[in-house]
Length: 80
Image: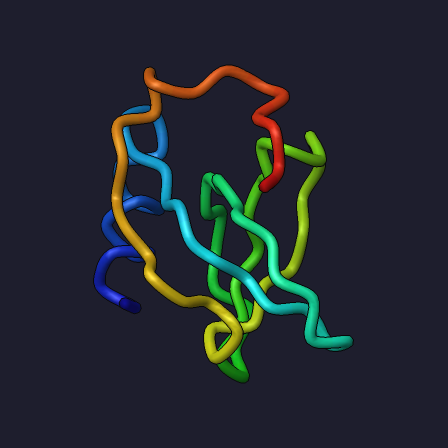
């Protein structure tokens, strides 16, 4: 999973990541994110294409992470 995020950081114009995210309250949502950089402690900063703002994500809360072509998504992306 970390390798996919790193690949997206290195290819920020071309790749985004999609994943199922569980927040601190146990709520699930589907996210489309353009990763920006690593924060340490198993976290990364990314531009959430649904919320249209930078957000912090905890790696342990990301599930079913996939790389996707960035041109397939236009903000705002509906959050499922």
